[in-house]
Length: 265
Image (cartoon, rainbow, N blue to C red; front, side, top):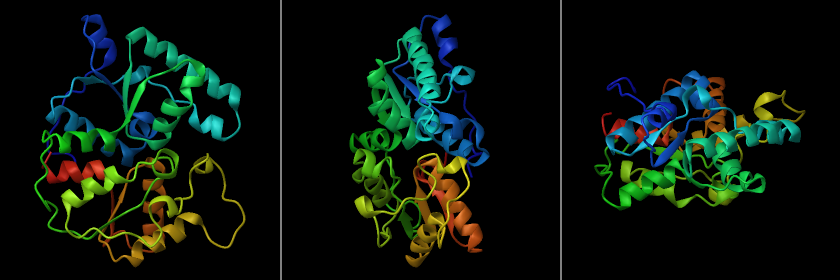
């Protein structure tokens, strides 16, 4: 899907040696760097940034984890070590504006790094894209996905954590005239089941896996596409579709992938 055009992604250290400073740091995150499926999301966003002629750069091999999983798992010392290391790196490059594609990275950089002196303008990619759409700089042809029936799963760290509900829906209404909500959505949405470091531990005892119940709710909408905006959510919803043997007829795409598809990038 995302192999149409190759681009050169600018790296912060290369720009620094040339005396250049980008407007934004694109924080790729662990999933965007290492997870084969989410790499395609990072690539899609990089293509859109290039398409929009945004002056940005990534840290490349200098990027490290934000420390969010460590803190959620209770290892406060490891979190602070990671955070302080990142803050020093940001200071070196004079970084003050950060765009993220992971809600967990967004939340911790925006709301928890300031306690350690790391104060930045942190922007979630959906906020960034909606701004460009509203300004007329990112033009999505109405219903460019042929009115595919799409539902959307609210990530906890975007929705309840940071009140980002309008932006993804604005984008989806541009992409399709056949958007449908799950029964539980926005502030009442059910978690995908992998937040709070659950991604890295065995499931606890219970009657049903959280990701399975959420996938069933999505399937009840009879949507052909389940849109997500978080690497953990994508993993869990994809696993749910496989468990239900529905991965052939129901697809799970990140919102930015749908935008890139509509723009034929």
